[in-house]
Length: 240
Image 1 (cartoon, helix red, strand yellow):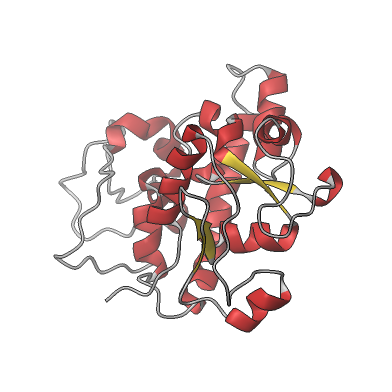
Image 2 (cartoon, rainbow, N blue to C red):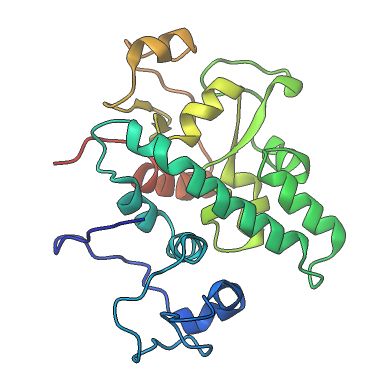
């Protein structure tokens, strides 16, 4: 994993490794570790190698900004995103495993949190309190719908956010895919937005009205807050 940070880009979520050593400590290499056991930098080591699993954990802790840099985003092509998806999925697997093994969380809640990652279970029921159909296709048969997170499961700052019904939309699988990857999003007033880097013909075949202005209806205040995160951090736009 090689990342060049230009002087024009500063991370907003600047983590302190010392605060997350419960996650990072097991991933430190036995020799020439870049971090001490306390989380402080290892000043006796120069230009050490950061193992991939440690780098993936650090990217996950920092969040969307680090993934944008690793992906090479400021999107010109979708290829960068496709190459980065295994890293994102590995990080999600790690977070899910951590939750599943955390005995401080009641077992029923652990199961609900892991199922929420797939848009099912308690999270889906919570979303149903606010949504009844796919906003884009109009499909209203619940067995054909997925509860899609507006603020991704992996980026949620708390388990409460992961299960918050206002942090979700009921979408058909193809629309869920487009929303999850940032090819579409929604304004607070309900207007559907289509990314300039999306393949328009593919979206047409998936039921997205790319040639017309579409308003999908109003959102609650909580949904608006989560959608703002989606627009700012997931929606794919070519940037100069």
